[in-house]
Image (cartoon, rainbow, N blue to C red; front, side):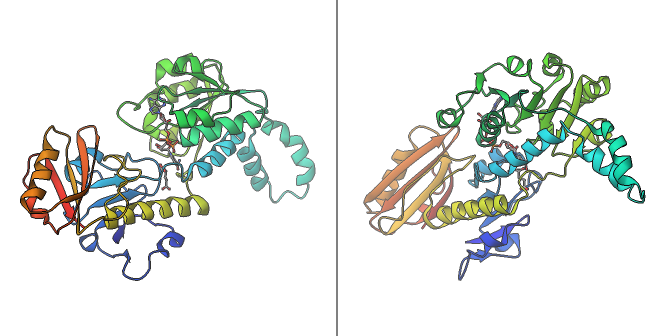
Length: 382
Ligand SMILES: NC(=O)c1ccc[n+]([C@@H]2O[C@H](COP(=O)([O-])OP(=O)(O)OC[C@H]3O[C@@H](n4cnc5c(N)ncnc54)[C@H](O)[C@@H]3O)[C@@H](O)[C@H]2O)c1
Ligand SMILES: O=C(O)CC[C@@H](O)C(=O)O
């Protein structure tokens, strides 16, 4: 494994790469990339790159379809930073309820006041707030983070409405039964004192918190966004903050527009910035890359299907990234037969337009035999 790091990657995780394995200083010398939030959409990816691992959940910085067309497998690390985000969302809930930031700023501004203890008792009424106990929160997106947030809010005595039309069975089983589940976004937000967003940024979710949805919310709602800024139509949000219909917007995503809005608390993308989350994500990302590079297995890919073929069973393991078109497997097996080899293992999986096939053969076979076959994108022989 020769990984090139596009961002700072946890040292604890990188230290697990010893001996012949490890990281390299140039992308040209690498077989894979470890990335966090670096934007890759405009980047020229050299042919030597076989895989990209995102140490994190969101993959909106990576051109998934373009890389799939090049046979570059993209991984992420589902759930590895979810607890870090959950804890920051709980902090955001409290920051939206009690004016801790205003109070702290007041103390700093009055640091030279000898009578500050007395003055503080008079000033504190300006920073009074409300409690979260008994309030209602709408959790938009019940994935790794949304589930943890929803359950924690139940434990804190809140009423929770969860919205996720694509809720997986595994996540449904983890969800506290006190959470009211709905597949209607407007229904989810209409009784909420807080709305927290936990869906991925994709074409289908862009601007989903729009004027119509904001208009369904109660006056004085607070919106928390630790997912991505593009999920919210910011013009509509700015107008609602200005009118006082939305009381507070707490977000992890600074941009030139949102920094001009009133009643915001804006953090510099700190959701996953804990030692634990950085280690968890990097350890998982490195394990995914190693298993792919050494064995051709695919776990947690966002642009290719999963493949669990274990270790090589024979003289050659051929891995083929290809288009999901009829008849290709016949071509592969014919090539192996024509080379005088027998197939020990044949596994194939598809995901949308793309597919991935692993063949273990009892005699060595060469990659060039498969190159040029219809639908074939990239072949490796391990
Ligand atoms: N602030 C940070 O540092 C930070 C850290 C981690 C993740 N994130 C963001 O949070 C997002 C969610 O992370 P996760 O780990 O929970 O991901 P996840 O994949 O486990 O969960 C996403 C959930 O969203 C649901 N979903 C998809 N489309 C939807 C729609 N249109 N409406 C409602 N639900 C929909 C999915 O069914 C899934 O349950 C990431 O994609 C990323 O953008 C931010
Ligand atoms: O890498 C980070 O610091 C942020 C990661 C986060 O936004 C994610 O989507 O996992």
